[in-house]
Length: 379
Image 1 (tube, rainbow, N blue to C red):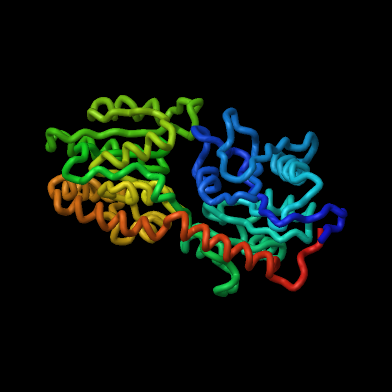
Image 2 (tube, rainbow, N blue to C red):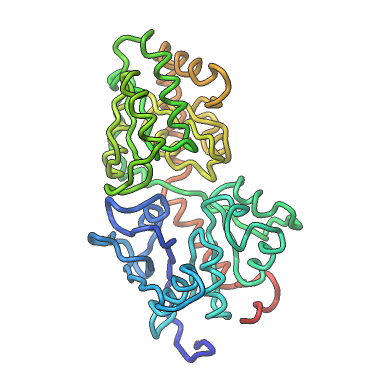
């Protein structure tokens, strides 16, 4: 099989990462981590070159954005097409960037393409309006990481079960650190994530400042920075939060590699995910459950869908709600043990083995039915 430009098509999948993601340990964000978990032997992963050695899963191809273009997105999309080389894959899977997907689709209009959305599509360029989302569906298939993302994409569109798939995020349960039994865990309340207002970092500090004086022997810790990577910048939000955390006795560890975060979750008694931002999925909550912590999570976005009975739900900005939930969990070891067991059972439903099977079925369907309409849109 050949394309209109006579390049032969192979039988693999090309996975296109967002420009900011780096496909390497210690540099990866959530999307690159998920790509590394799911990548098969024949998959090609394309993205900006990391500083260190890429993950071994699949084969990594660095993208050099084109020298000319109307925008960074256009230059990146052109760079992705060039990086594919003379032999095209049989499917292109673009993660979280409708604008990049459209740029590639215009260059390769007959190529089967899957766009996987990890965030709210209504906040994304080329997906904000129903008309823009319909235009996407005419060129490619769409999947979202949760029912919440799916609902946001379909908002204002004729709803149909086969218009959009749900492809939940996943974890590799076998690769996680062994959870410490609850009775032997550190009496520690842990926050792990970006230290920004959207993630409720200040709500965590506020709640801990109120309850820690009443619970001697318990400590609190925050792992994270403004963004992923050791070179994360200092921000005004952090500058204001650090003295508050210090006054409350909260240890702030800054950015740490993902394996360090998972080990901390496997030893802490309680993990709090107090997001204000509507989480499109909530991978931190899933990892917390999988590593056996007693989880307290916000209800924003897809969090309650992910957590269900595997944790307590508490709004970070309702007066005293987060503080009450924390005191409830700290005071009750059987409750913490029950949440730990229920959370681990819930997390196993998102194991990578099941996710790979769902992805394989979806990719096969996309290859068989690449476009919503009988013919793809023109270039």
